Each structure stands twice: as C-alpha cells, then as structure tokens.
Length: 344
Image (cartoon, rainbow, N blue to C red; front, side, top):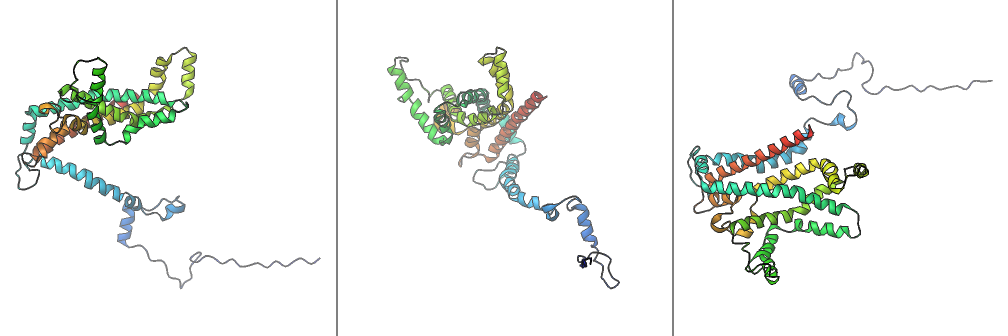
C-alpha cells in the first residue's frame, strides 16, 4: 500500500526574529537622554498585557488635568489670595493698598460684632446638626417600608430640596409675618392674643432660620439614610425581635450602629453648612441681619465688613474669612477623629 506523500510547508520566521546575518544592521541603542527618561518614568511592567502595553505614564495625568486646573483656579488660588489679602488694607473695589501685618487679626479679636457673629454661627450649628442627624433618619425609617402610595410621600418630603432657597425664604416670610398664615390661624383658634414676632425678635428670627434650614434639608439627608438602611441586614432586626427587643431598642441597638457612618457624614456636612448659612438669615432678618444686626452669622458679617463698596475693608473681611475657614476645618477634623475612635 502506497503511503501518502506529506508536503511540509516551510515556516517563515517573523521579521526581526532569529539570528541576524552578517549584513543585517543592529537596532540603534537608546541615547543617554532616553535612558534617563526611562529610569525616571518607567513604562509598563513586564507582566502587563492588553492596552497596558501601549499606555504611557502621562496618560492618567492628561485626564486629570481639567480637574486639577479647575481646582487650582477656583479653589487653591482664591484661598491663597484671601490669606495674602488678610494682611493688607485692600478695598473691595481695588486700588492701592498697604501691608498691615497682623492688624486685621488684632482688630478681629477685639471686635464684639465678630464674636456675636461667631456665637450665632456656633449656636446655629449646635442646634441644627443634632436635629439634622436624627430627624432625617426617623423620616427615612418611616418611608422605607413598601406601602401603597409611599412613593408620593417620598416625593413630597423631597420637594423642598428642589426649591430655591430664595423661594423658600419668601414662602416662610409669608407664613411667619404678623399677618401671615401661622399668626392668623393661632389668633383665630384663640391660642394667642397677639401676633408672635417671628420676623422682628432677634431670637425668634434665629430659631425660624434654623427651622427653615431643617425643613429644606430633611428630604436631602433622608436619601442618604435610605441608602444606608438598605445595607442593614434584616436578620439582625429579626433576631432582636425574637429576643424580645421593642421598636425603640431595635432602633438604638440595630439601626443606629448600622448607619453610624452615614450619621457621621451627615453631621459633618450639616456642620459645615451651618457655619456658612447666609440666605436664611437674609430672607427672614432682612439686609441688616435682624434688628441691629443681632442675627448676623460669620458669612453675613464678612459681607458687611468686607464687601461694602463705600465702607468695606477687603483685608479685614479676608481675615474673618480665614477665621471661618479655621473654624470649619477644626469641626471637620473633630468629626473625623470621632469617626476613627468609633471605628476602633
């Protein structure tokens, strides 16, 4: 029987593979500049594959360049410029100025209006932050259950977040004025004999502004807690119920530990926002910040002393801004430390 003939096809080596002939030219070795660049900015690792073989070291920096430029132009540079201006007597509209050293900071420490604004800001934070941490959590627990029509209530609670602060402030002006809805209803119900001065008493203006902040922020932070509650295992609630724990005990022993990180986040964000409050005081207390400026917060005070085109001192306003930044930074670092201690 004749064996079939097998034709072997010669395999052609890829270009550049195998030994080079005597006439082949060797590849040019990299120059000293290229070797130095490779030692400082090495390429992909030896086990890299796919697109990583063609990725350059500078490519991630290229994608981050717009964010870095934006943060530098609108964040770092204004901050550094504010610090520099705080050592001068610059005017709001520009012009010649002189370096005054620490004079603005000495004036700030001896200014009773600055300490009044600081008191109002701290009081605002001390009252609003605990309520804003707890009330949205209770609201999230209330709307978490999948009941018929619960989507309507979730949307209704979130609606104030979508409204402008100015629009909300005007609405509260109408509600709390002497002839507003609240006073009219209380008078007709014979609960009070005369209108409550919500918008003329300094303490009531401050408390009304806090209520406005709480009402507008409840729906926003409710969303935070709804996401956190979804990560709390149902088995823990069921086990606690089997052990005889009531609703209040399950809330403190199961729900609160499960959303503790979200509570720290809400507290930090609310604290920073409380120290920066301006619109609520302006809308309810007027352009003076309450009677005689008694309800001015630090941002309100910065506007009055630093941005007035006739009597303002941009240098002094910048010094107060630096103090507000230091206060906000201290609050943030304190919250982070409390979070770390809680985790440990």
